[in-house]
Length: 150
Ligand code: HEC
Image 1 (tube, rainbow, N blue to C red):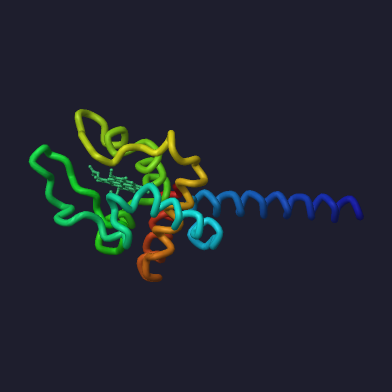
Image 2: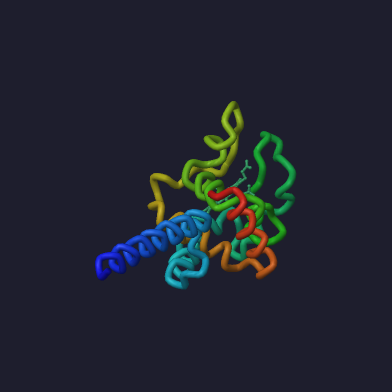
């Protein structure tokens, strides 16, 4: 009898771990973790703000390529399309850069940060960015993550 209860508890604990892991995967970017967001804000200022703007506003005319065919840095606020990409894609763009993500002969000024930032630091920067979005945009972004399963 005792053993039966112990076994049941172990099984329930196991299920809880699996559920928790799945949840963590759907939500890679720790935007509700205030320590990560604070770290990310500093890292953003240091590594991203020169191009993406101190207030995440992006560069002027960010939709139009320059004479050499390069796109300016887009905003990371609601006016841009950062929030149209699920967590994993944002992570990979930041880590490997846009050229690596698009492939072919695509040329971009968004270089990867794999040599500069750790994976956790990249996630912290993205957490800061996401934490600035209004609740309705965060909700839509969460729903997209859940859909693609990240
Ligand atoms: C040297 C300028 C520069 C710096 C510094 C820079 N970026 Fe970018 N970033 C760009 C440009 C330009 C693009 C658009 C690239 C393209 O589509 O060709 C871009 C695009 C992106 C995108 C894709 C957005 C979308 O809507 O598709 C993400 C995400 C991103 N950057 C994150 C970051 C983060 C995070 C940092 C800091 C760790 C950073 N960038 C630093 C220039 C920069």
